[in-house]
Image (cartoon, rainbow, N blue to C red):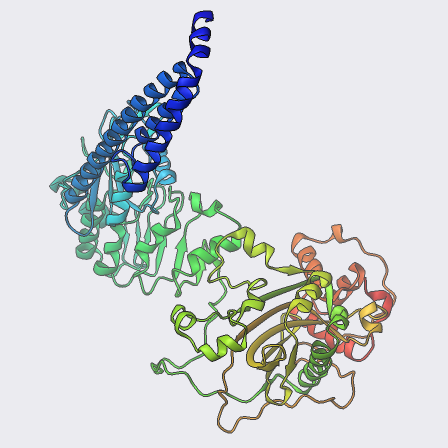
Length: 636
């Protein structure tokens, strides 16, 4: 170290001169042409070596080593690129092996002997970039080879990408193989199905009982109703032996996949009931294979894993939306599907003319007009006074329609200049909750204004307006205990001096007497609102009249309904414990309290006097509220 230090100090001046000369020459080279190694990290290493010469011989040598190291790294990069290219070529080769349009078969190896096939499939599902829909899966006797058949090519490619994935510290190999699965079944199995159907089919009731048929013994042949070929063979037998079968019981058969049962619709056209009780169906998408059963009325799925997915409402919704003709699910009646009451002969897709304003009755009209008169007047003049129109539980969702890409880039330059070169809806985009464009759940939640304070902040941040109340369209009707008001119209934006069209849907409920909102003159309060701003359109219906917003005669008109008879006025209520009621009754009480703001004992009394009919209780509440027959102490 001492010798090196002395040598370095003696030659320091020479090194400094060499360093300056080298930097000058490097600058000249860079001014003329870049080094051919500039793209490699080795080029930077060479510069380090020259700069090191000005600071000491040791550093200069180390710089030279860096230069060589940079070249080596450049070579490593080239080798990595070659490896990536090889992987792409191998993947492309596997892609070429996926012939056809469906029924792609892939073999998975590398797992330990005796591997659980179901667990392996779930693992591959979670790791796959595509939503896998496996129509058939099986393994050899040792369990070291698993085979998966998928219908979609993208799903097959997603499985191929999992090649080399670690599964319980074992490296998996995923390869496409030729699908040589036979679509016929052994004659012994066909004979068995023929005898079994003949002895288990009740012709009087047209019911076929195949409960636990997979546990029957046929020598070395195993009955597997997850095998597409086996199920198709069964359907062919059914077509011959029981062509008019109406109900099939398939319970207790370890069924996980229903791909083979898709043949039921082509062979048996009279099926109205199927029991799949106590099987192993885990995916709602398996039910899609039964969607072509146009006359299915009764379906039993109890005892399957899908019954435990989510709550009961989600389960019934997932099943019901797949079978619009279904009337009974798990032996329980299901409510009719909500649909538009349109004649079947209507096939036109043209947009009908706009209709006149719709009000369920005169009371709905007067309440809606009274609220909107006050609301829009304050919205245009003193927006901060709208605080009382919302409560602490109110929700507001603002959205706007944005121009298309072509319009933004090639739009009217005059409009752009008038708006200062800004986007047409720039003032609204910060608050916009357009769910078509917003995919992240946290952003969807953050853009939802909650509570009267936050809502007022959003409204105060929007541009100043002047509504054209003479041209608004209004629909007002009662919906589940609230007054629903839909408003369509235009307003003039004062700063930009442009017209806008808007759509607002407001759910209104009465305010509690003696509350701050009531003291400010609000009879109704917004509990939920959707506010959409869009480009101005001047489309009006021929012969239709816009709702003229004016002060209705009388400011306290009851919201009436044809449901139920009005109960007597509230009297003093003796305390009654909610815990003494059943769970269903407690749910109705909580629901009524949320909508009406009634205290618990008054909500119970109102439901009792209406035979626990929720709709009748809500309608009665509005009648009593409109006639001032609910005492202030009834409200929370």
